Amino acid sequence: MKIIKFGHCCLLIEDQEVKEIASPWIKTPINFNKIKNKIKSLTVFLSSNEPYGFVKENEKIFKEKLNAKVIILKNRSHFSTDEGITELPEILDEI
Image (cartoon, rainbow, N blue to C red; front, side):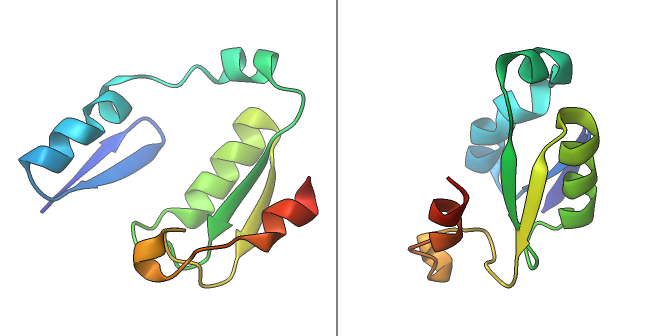
């Protein structure tokens, strides 16, 4: 297992297939100014127990770089059906 840090994010690379899938995320820099110019507002949902970590770091980046509203949901893991997450009613409450 290998952890790769790029920009303000990190990825956990487990095998070659995952590495190939993650490659665009690793190699493409994020142009925060371009994003800010394209959006009126941004709400980001993070999970308090994200298995890949970096919740506080990502919260800080989204707030500072994109003026985002960040909502941290308690114990929602990676927001995937593999972890039993099939609904996020909090998103509906936000829109």
